[in-house]
Amino acid sequence: MKLSVIVPAWNEAGTIAEVVRRLRAVERPDLAFEILVVDDGSTDATAAAAASIVPAVTLLRHAENRGKGAAIRTALARATGDAVIVQDADLEYDPADLARIAARLSEGSSVVYGSRILGGNPRSYRRYYWGGRLLTAAFNLLYGTRLTDVTTCYKAFAREALAGAPLESRRFEFCAEVTALMALRGERIVEIPIAYHPRSMEEGKKIRWHDGLTALWMMLRLRLGGGRPGRAVLA
Image (cartoon, rainbow, N blue to C red; front, side, top):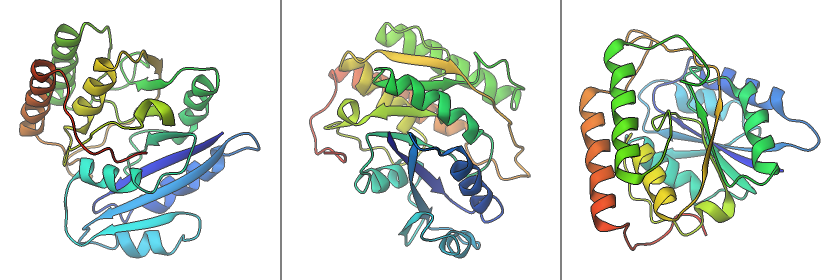
């Protein structure tokens, strides 16, 4: 399997090279990674750090910060793998878990999420933990699903599952948008437990409370509208 690993990075100079090193350590003869790093208008040395490990990665750049969702869409337009997954650049998520996620894709699952809740991990700030649980409960109520972690970074899609999805998100509402589109298409989302190592605001955590409101609005808008027409970013 060839897995396109999308790494959106904004001011992650201290961790981006280590993330890529850990990703490459997971590869094996039956699992190859296409790593697409998107420097999302960083103001630190992220671009230089990523450039130093080319050709181990494909480096894409935004001239200004556009947001995580926009970075993912930029990478999707270049992805060539059999499947796609998002990997944060901050080491909160362990690349070693990608082997198990890829295995579920190889076994026939078309959408696989890594759940921090099922993994029994340390919690982030209380407001983030309960905010994520609330958004997940709202999503389940709106879409009739039984997910445990809608806001997880580790979302993997077989190419045919994501193909044609009209993604428009710019920031963290990508999680709500892509999950809603999968639910509206009738895709079965499989969850598996993963490891999680939350970092602090001082260490660079970027999501804010208003991102949760934007995600909730995205869920409602897509549910009430039954999806949306639009141009896909992955053919």
